Length: 76
Image 1: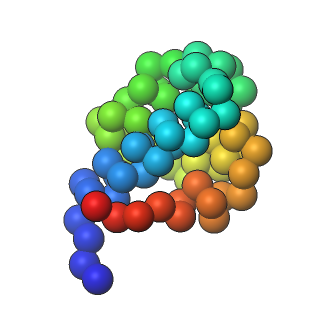
Image 2: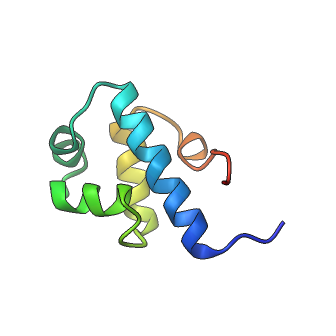
């Protein structure tokens, strides 16, 4: 299956937002737990930036999930 980078990044952002909301966290609370800015969380969720693996690890840790779960989402 071929998927564009833009589609993957968009789906990842949507998935992160869904996981964050499921945990009842605000963007600010997640950002604080990840030691990054709220603005960066928002940009990731809106697929405005292609974030690095270090940040994805921080997000998965803050959401208390495995990195594999963070990256396991349907591609639309």
